[in-house]
Length: 175
Image (cartoon, rainbow, N blue to C red; front, side):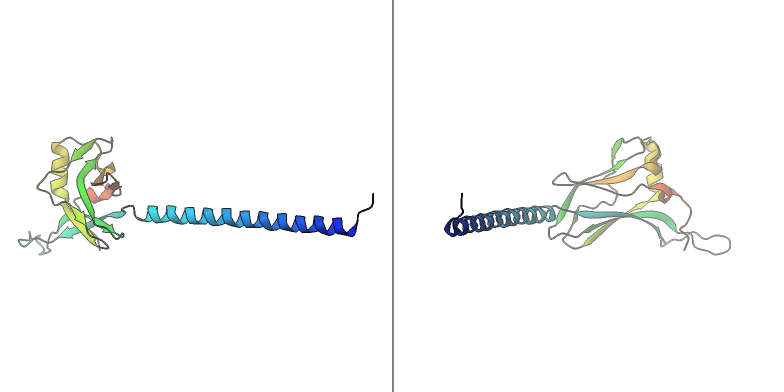
């Protein structure tokens, strides 16, 4: 069987047309995947995000106790720092303490707590180490040094601090 030049060019043009059609479908599917990923990343970016830290601090009261050698005694505290990096205000519904055995305790109402963190701002709550240790002993927490604070927002997203660890020490902070 002889192949005529007309059949050869007809086959070649069909092959080229088919190749271009496959390339167009590939590009369409690729652009659909990219637009889907873009939409997904936009949705994930709108989820409220708080960055929670725990800082060891000391407060110098107005009536400072004096050591015999005249040095001021600071009151040891730790500060819960919440930073909001999103465009929406995050309202905190509940602040709890979770001890080393994963038991949940609500903090006393008279303690300073974070109720909301405005967009691109930072809020803090200062907790006295002595007050915390007394409260932890009163409610019989287990291993409070292995515990952490948990902040829950109005959408039930949970944000936890690092473990308390050495923050519960009554020793003054070393500079």
